[in-house]
Amino acid sequence: MNGVVKEGKEAIVYHANGANGGHDLAVKVFKRIQEFRQRGSYVDGDPRYHKQKFSSYGKREQVELWSQKEFRNLTRANSAGVPVPLPVLCDKNMLFMRFLGEDGWPSPQLREIDIRRGSSKWIHLYCQTLVAVRRLYHCARLVHADLSEYNILLCPSHQVDQDVGVGDERTSLSSSSSKKEDHIVSLQSVLIDFGQSVDNTHPSANEFLARDVSRLNFFFEHQGIKTLNNTEALDFVLAPCKYEDENDDITNSTNKDLAAVCEEDGDTADNTNVHPTLTTTA
Image (tube, rainbow, N blue to C red; front, side, top):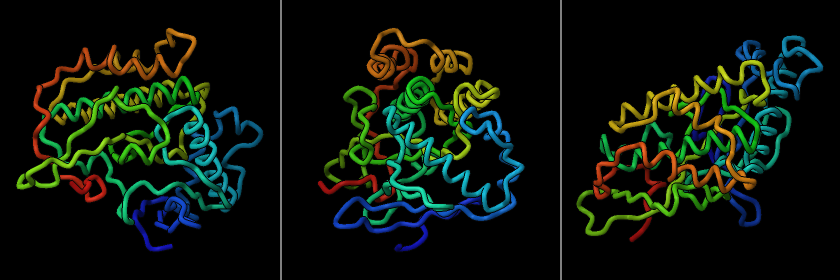
C-alpha cells in the first residue's frame, strides 16, 4: 500500500497498486471503534440480517459484519448498473475496491468541486445523481441512507463500468483560464460509502430515502440551480418503471423528466478549477 488517501471516523482508505498491471485498488480498513454499536438501526431491520440483533455481536464481529455489509451492498449496486466503486474482496475488516482517481490522486468529493455557481454543469451532475438513486432503489433494491455531497465522488466515467451518464453530455472542465484549449473529460458522479445502506423493504427505508433526497436538493440548490422540490424528487425516485427494461427506463428518465424541469443557463464554457485527477492532457 502506498499511503492514506482518506481518513474518517470509522475507516481509513489506502491507495494500493494493482497486481500484474491491473487497476489500482482502494483498501478501506474499518477501525475497531465504539461507533459501530450505534449502527444497529441500519442492520436489524434489514431482511438479510434478521437472525440476530446487531447489539448482540461482539465489537470485533460488529466491525467485520459492517465491512461485509458494505461489500454486499456494493456488489448489488454494481451488478444493477449503479455507478459505484467496483468491489473486489472483503477480508475481515478490510474492503478492497477499484481505486477511483489517477496517479494516486483520489477523485474529489462533490463538495470539493469548484464549478461556477449556476453553471449548467451542476444540472448535469444533479440529473446523474438522482438517476443513480432511482436506479439504486429499483434495480439494486437498496437505499443509500447516508447520501450527501461527502459520499459522492466525481471521476472519469471510464473508471466506472456502467454507462449511466446524462445522455451523451460531456462536462467541459478547464484546469486554468489561461489554457488555449479546454481539457475535455467525460465525468460521472459515483456513490460511495455503502455500509449503512439498507434493503428497500427495511422498515425505515422510505425515511432514509427522503433524508437522502432532501440533502441532495439542499446541496444542489446552494449551487444556484433549479431542482425538483423534495416531494417531486422523491416521487421521481419511487415512480414505477414504465417499460419492461428497467435499465432503459431509468436511464432515459434523466432527459425526459429532469432536464425538462431544471432550467439551464446555457453557459457551458465557464472555467472550472478541479482536482488534478479530473484533467487530461490536451
